[in-house]
Image (cartoon, rainbow, N blue to C red; front, side, top):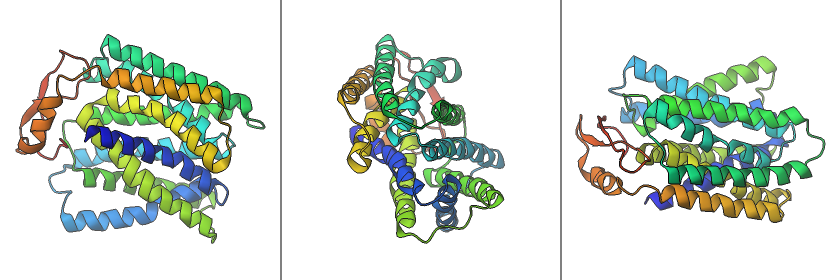
Length: 327
């Protein structure tokens, strides 16, 4: 199950870069983001109200989820879309975003006590090497793009890392539907305010624009973003962020097929290195697999104890978790 979730996550998350490229030709980044989240937030609020999935969430927990949404959606997506609007290729944007696993891995120990094993550090460093290989190949082929445009995706990467650790340090778990609703509602408010302030709230009439919006809502939001938090809670920070290494080469292949973006030998080599990094990191810890499988059926009561999503072998610890935690 975790393997299938990982494949779906990589494809759906990568689709966000492609969707941003699809919409970039018909509207500004703020227009796309506003209409991506505004209708979605309305639908999710209605569903959450009917299912009462928000019950039990405190005001503090609600505020924390709003901040997480502002960091992981608003801050992250705005930088990605703006970079693509400036001319940075979708594959290159994903490649720059691939630095995230090393940052998250370095901070997992002091912030979450999820210490990374030597084998996993080897995989993380190998993955960064693959990202560098593909990034240099794409940057060499780019023309007419300001050098500082390549720095913008780094800001989005740091925003997503901050959201990841804020969620990891939270002792109050929200139901997946509740989290998604709060995050999307926060983004809808942020992007609507920015679009209205910039005079970019009116959507274009072109079918391509609404096709890109549908693509982003179904594949990127429900697929990529939803799976990100599910895998994060099941497997821990290091593992979910290691999968981010695959976004760069997958997006590069996808971009080459759909938009004719450059894809040469160095990109192919980077893809192979990224795959090797994921195999190394995901093979570094099998000590908690059985526990998580058992929890899927049994750990439903409040206060149930289960192994935390640590990534280093022999360092498992336990903690109280909410009955709503994803197993």
